[in-house]
Length: 245
Length: 91
Image (cartoon, rainbow over all chains, first blue to last red; front, top):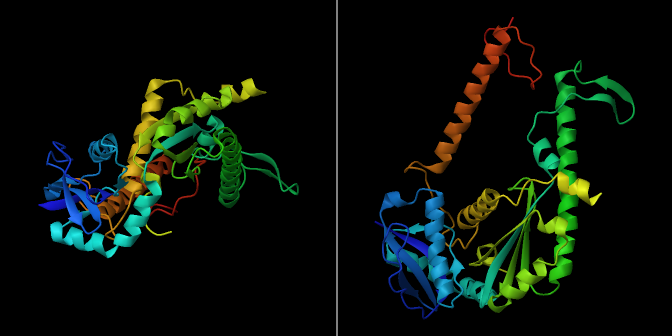
């Protein structure tokens, strides 16, 4: 058996009543100094990376949020031999954990995912198309008859142009989001086109009580942006759960 | 011009697309974000170490791709694909 770490909370945090974890085990609070960890005792083979594990891990965060607490989510997959090993690791980083908990206290995470234009997303994954014309305005070429080196460089150039196009699109969308939300978000993180090609993901840390206003402001984005937007949340502040400054 | 731009967008009013995005977001968050206090995270697929599984997949994919390319060249098909390493049958 192993100890699966779900999340961290400021102590004291009582054990969540009746809450089951990813293996159906009871989730319990483990005291580690000024920090409380919600953990479960699970079989060694229960850590397979899957959508189901993600949902069950996240269900524990949602339970904490439902109790009015803001948990500091642990990245799924952290296992310890026993309670003592878990307490030792948490105690070793107690100050950093408490700082991180203070940063997210009273907040939730909202996520905006914008689709970028189709032609940009598809072009990045398709083989380079035959190209005729000039490169840099100097050398006339026909890629069909060109060597493999030329085709390779053409492919690289095409991918670079697509990436630049995505970055420009992402920057424009981000400016519009910042304009409508103004100072509502406490913090923001932005994922570029990687690791989600063709999609701009912006996560905001907001106060719990600001969710309705947040959604209302996002709803005031231009129709063209709203039509390609998916809103996720509120969730535990995964994107803001980092240790250190 | 705005209408041209919208015509190029994917059909995000599709419910499945929304669910896909939300699930992708959840997977990204749970497995790639959140506090790491142990210095390492171990998650496997069916009790097999993840790094080993990833490497096996790459090797298998590369070998399969090479075999397919050899088959096309043997049939005399011109290939517009990127160059492949010389096979044992070359020449």
